Length: 127
Image (cartoon, rainbow, N blue to C red; front, side, top):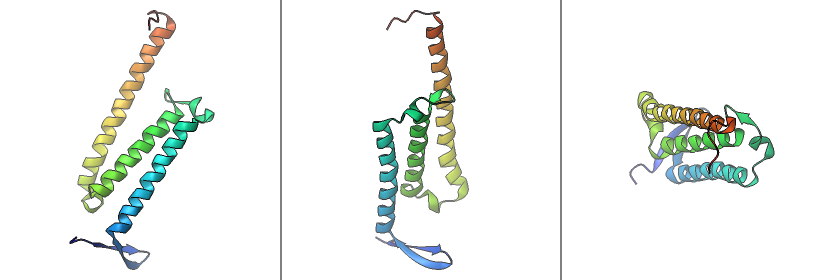
């Protein structure tokens, strides 16, 4: 590869970090975040499943946040956003985060409305 090494400044000293170290770092980070998601999905702690935050269980919020963290890190590393100008980084990262947040907001409020309609008895539960 033409760009086998990358020069980094770490605590005032110059340090070379090659691509193999970067790949292992990405693998370890994504593996840890995924392992946390899997463990939480298997055990489903009662504290997180019986706590509602903004109309949704806390465990679901944790899954959404960890998924966004993984998506951001993948785009940061594999799309090489760390080397781009800040305006391009903001355009690429903040636009989907805003749209996903808006989508979650819409889905939660619509689902809560439909649930309240069924719960209050305006429409019979027929499924």
